[in-house]
Image (cartoon, rainbow, N blue to C red; front, side, top):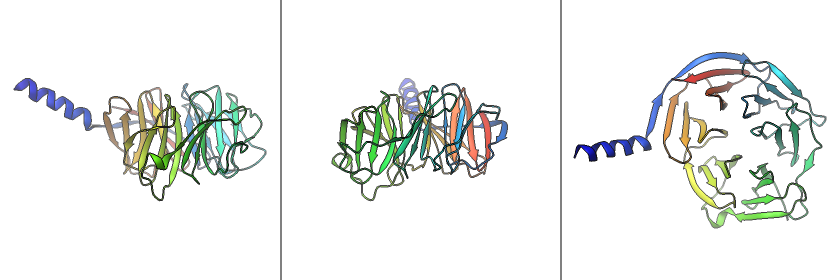
Length: 267
């Protein structure tokens, strides 16, 4: 009987949030209010402003590289996870650029419409370095060849999901999965063929990030960390500040509010 009770308690603990605390390590100023953010595998932080300027910071708050675009516009998404190549997408232009680790830019690339009837939506790099496109006109996931625009995968989401009045805010690829955040449906996960896998959480968030096997986001003045495979959940109460972004690398949590980055470690 005691053994059964112990097993049951362990199973319950694996499903419910484990409360933890943050210990503040330091802070630094960015110099502008970022519109989006990213972190690479080495722990460098990337922030953009509404004119498209992107600064790359080390964990001590020093700007190590700077990018100033010839064509001003607000980046919708930065994905610097690879480290050697940073993907920057502009929804308003339907364009993207690729930056090297020194933030030197390639040419701007237009989303290739040659095989698309129409497109208006979000884009991100896939795990195989092609492009995932979310067409919010038709609510479809499309993977295209980054070199020639050929459609590799197309999946109509309304055939597998009951989504009405969708409002998809953010998209990221990680560990051969694609994650979407919808303001009404929460965070949804899809496999590398664009097929729906699961709803990670019903909580809505305009931004999320990853660290090791966890997806991390802010909601209800708490930091939420969900293991993508074990399904364990951690919740950490946040200081009473309007944090917009969370990033994590090298066991440090970076919380962004206005022009300030607060750095914490988890106790």
